[in-house]
Image (tube, rainbow, N blue to C red; front, side, top):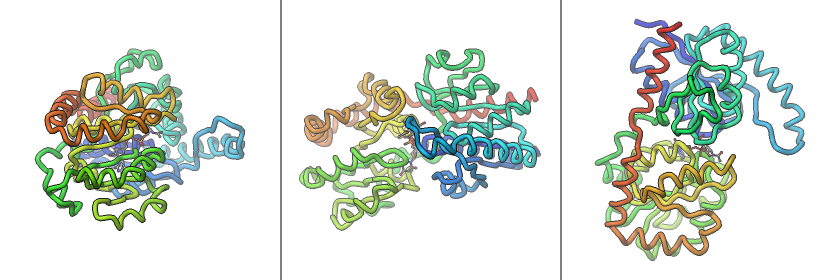
Length: 365
Ligand SMILES: CC(=O)N[C@H]1[C@@H](OP(=O)(O)OP(=O)(O)OC[C@H]2O[C@@H](n3ccc(=O)[nH]c3=O)[C@H](O)[C@@H]2O)O[C@H](CO)[C@@H](O)[C@@H]1O
C-alpha cells in the first residue's frame, strides 16, 4: 500500500504527452494505490488525450512565446503569472510526492513552483536538442532523463541519466499482429499497406505529397492509412471515397496502425522515431525542417546513417520520392534489411529506467 501522489506535466503536442502517459502507466503498475494528476495547457490536445488514457488533468492558461511581436506575446507575462499562481494552488492542494515534467510550455510554471518548494522533481527530454522549457528547468530539477548522448552541453552533467524515450506499452507488443492490424482497419490482405504519419499535429508538406501521389500509389498496388492531422482533415477527407485510401485526423489506435503497415512514411519527431525503432518496420523519414536546430533531421539522420531507414529531405521530395518509394515497395529484401537494422536501435527499457529514477527520488525524500 502506498500513498504516493504524482503530478505529471507536459504537453502541447503528442511528443510531450505520450511520454508522460507511458511513465504514469508504469508508475501505476508499481504503485496501484498511487494518485495521479496531469497538468497541461488548457487549449491543447492533452485536455482530450490524457482523460482518454484514464487520468485527470488540470489546464493552465499558458502558451509559448512567438519570435515576433504579437498580441499573444504582450499578454504572456499575465498568462505566466496566473499559471504560476494556479500551479501554487494545485501543488498546495494535491501535495505531490514527486513531480515529473515531459516538456512543452505547460510544464514550466508547475515545475518552477514545485522545485522552489523543494518537491523532488524529474524531467524527461525527448530530443537531441532540448526545448526551451526543459533547458530552463534543468538547473532546478533533481534528475534529467534523456534519450541522446551529448546533452551535458545543455544540462548539469551530474543530473543526467541516459534512459531513452518512454513508449506506451501497447506499442511494444505490435510484432506478430500484422493481420490483426489489417483487419482492424478493414484493409485488403493482398495489397501493400502504407501508413503515413505527420506527427501528432499532421504535416502540411507530407499531406501535399500524398495527395499528389494518390494515383501513383494505386498503380503500385498500395493502400493507405493516412493520418493528415486535425487541422487538415476537412481539406483531405474527400479522399475517403477512394477505395485504396483511408484519411484520419488522428489515430487513437497506433498499435494497430503500426501492426497493419508494410511500409511507413513519417515525420521524425523524437517519440515517433523511438516508436518506429520498436515496431521495426521499413520507414521513409521526411523530417520537419521547421523545428529548433533542425532536430528532426538529426533524429532521422542518426537512424539513416545505420542503414536502418530512408531519409528524404523536403527539398528533395520532387526528385526523389517516387523513385525511392517504388524501389522500396517492390524490394522485399530491402524491407527486411531496414526492419532488422532499425529494431537494433530500440531502447525498450526506457520507461522502466525512468521510473527507477523516480523511485530513487521517493526513497531519498
Ligand atoms: C512540429 C513539432 O514541434 N514537432 C515536435 C513534437 O512532435 P510530435 O508531437 O509530432 O511528436 P512525436 O513525433 O515525437 O510523437 C508523436 C506521438 O503522437 C502519437 N500519435 C501521432 C499521430 C496519431 O495520429 N496518433 C498518435 O497517437 C505517436 O504515436 C507519438 O507517440 O514533439 C517531438 C518530441 O518532443 C519533437 O521531436 C518534434 O520535433
